[in-house]
Length: 415
Ligand SMILES: Nc1nc2c(ncn2[C@@H]2O[C@H](COP(=O)(O)OP(=O)(O)OP(=O)(O)O)[C@@H](O)[C@H]2O)c(=O)[nH]1
Ligand SMILES: [Mg+2]
Image 1 (cartoon, helix red, strand yellow):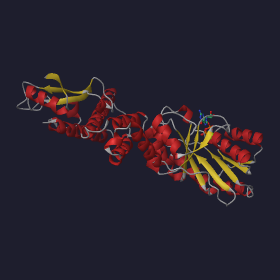
Image 2 (cartoon, rainbow, N blue to C red; image 1 turned 60 degrees about the vertical axis):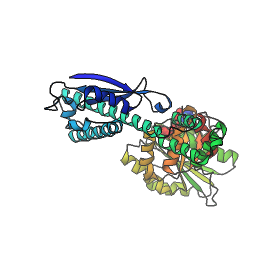
Image 3 (tube, rainbow, N blue to C red; image 1 turned 30 degrees about the horizontal axis):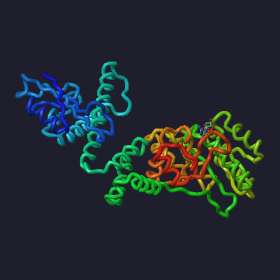
Image 4 (cartoon, rainbow, N blue to C red; image 1 turned 120 degrees about the horizontal axis):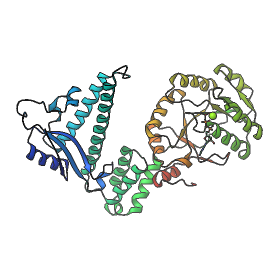
C-alpha cells in the first residue's frame, strides 16, 4: 500500500491532483486544512490537505486495501471512493454517519464486559468518528462561506467576532445575513453602521421582563436550577433589594432540606436582614408555609440545586414548585456553563416550568455568547443578571441592549 499527501487551494483541486497521480481506486484516509484548523478558516487562505492510499498490486481485483478498521466496522469500501471535492464532502459525511451508526449498533448503551483489546478498539473507533465529524464540520463551514465570496469585510469580521464570543454559528450567520440584506452597499462599507445594525438585531433576540408589579399579594417567586449556580445568594440579593430599596414586606421559604448547611445559609441572612423564613420539607407542607405569609408583598422560595441528569429529583423539585403555585419561576444558569450543557439544563428543567431566566456569575464568564444562544433557543425572557458574590449589590435587572452589548464586546459592563 502506498500512502501519500496532496494539497490544493480547494478540496476539489487537491482531489484532482490525487486522482491524476493515484487513479480512481485511491481511498481518502483523511482531509484537513493546513497549517491550522478552526471554524474561522474562511478568513484565512488555508490549503486543503488530503491523505490518500492505494494498493498498487491488488487494486483491480479486490478491495483488500480498504482500511481494516473501517471494514471491521462494516463500512463498504465504495463509500470512500470519490471523484470530486463536493463528493468527498458528501462521502466523508456518509462515512462518518455509517461509521457512527455501526459502532452504535455494535455497542448499544454501555460497552459492557469486553476484552481489553476490543475496548481499546472501540475507543480508537470512537476517536476516529469524532475526528471525521470535526473534519466534516470544518468543511461545511468552509463551503457555506465560500458561496459568499463577496461578503463585505466588516461583515466577515463581525461574524468572526460573534463566533469568538461563543454565539453559535447558526445565529451568527443569521445576524450577518440580516445586516447584508438590510444595509445598502454604502452602509456595509461603514464599520459603525454594520455594528449598530448587528447590535440592534442582537438586542431583538433577547426578551427581558422587568420585575412584575402584580396587585396579587403575595407575589410568589421561586428560583430553580443546577447546583451551585447562585440560587440562594440571588434569593438573598432580591429579598434585600425588595425590603430595603422597594420598601416591601418580604418573606422567605427554603425548600432545600437536602444539602447540609443550606437552611443555615439562608437563615443567617434572614436573621441579619430581619426577614421571616419558613422551611418546607415536603411539597404537602408548602401551602401552610405560604399561608403564614398571606399579608406579605413578596415571598421568595429557595430550592434545592439539582443536576440536569437527575430526572427523578427534578420531578420531585417540580412538585415543590407547583405546590407553591408561583407567578414567577426563575431558572438560574451559570453563564460560564458550556453551551451544550446549558441546552441540556434548559431541556431537563422544563418540568419545573420556568418563565424567567437569570444569568449568574457574569463576572466569571469569559464570553457571553451563550446568553443569546439560550435566550433565542428558549424564547424565555431574561429577568436578572448577577455579577458577583456581594449581597445585595451584584445583581441587575436585565436589559436587552445591555445584554447585546456584552455579547458583542465580550466585556462585562455596567449597563
Ligand atoms: N463570582 C460569583 N459568584 C457567585 C455569584 N452568585 C453566587 N456566587 C457564589 O457561588 C457560590 C454558590 O452560591 P449559592 O448561592 O450557594 O448557590 P446555589 O445555587 O444556591 O447552590 P446549591 O444550593 O448548592 O445548589 C457561593 O460561593 C456564592 O457566593 C455571582 O454572581 N458571581
Ligand atoms: Mg442554595
